[in-house]
Length: 239
Image (tube, rainbow, N blue to C red):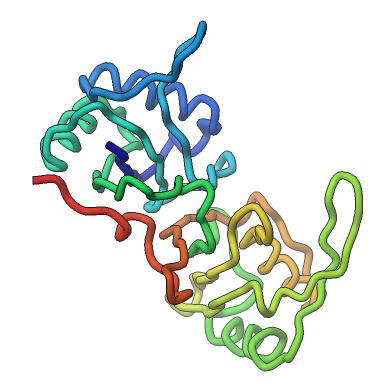
């Protein structure tokens, strides 16, 4: 049986990297008595995969992992058992059964929603109203938004417009929040801070990574019609 688990990550747990989160959930499965399947061979390991792991320092309401189990209690009972093992900063919010032929979340991720805001002690160079005008002028109204994307081995020019599905500003006048929905996955993986820092550059500003808190809100795949659908909506609750 294939299971998809959704969880939140906040507080000090945002500083825990992906490999440590994987070890954390492996221990949680044992403590919660989840009847998880193991691989075969000389070194069996739990069958578990994560969708688009977070970078260190990023909080989230939309993290996912897929597991395979021999049998399962109800979604409610399984969530309760897992959350009883969790530390402050991690909470399971969904536990659903996937179709037998479902692909792993890792392989089908297509997009993700993010909220970027200024951390305590840092001030925005513009008000929320001004940022709305800037985003409208420099991004929304432009037919293209060309940037130079750098990797360890090369640099290439990329048009962000078709890879950014939403970009708008909300929040109190002196506390703007940037809502950015971007292409995510193995082919076109765009980080939200790249979008915001590129707008900063258009304004002649210096972007400070330390000033911005990034929060992931949701992760999506595409259904058979090409529409974006949250990964948790691809399964069914177990009663």
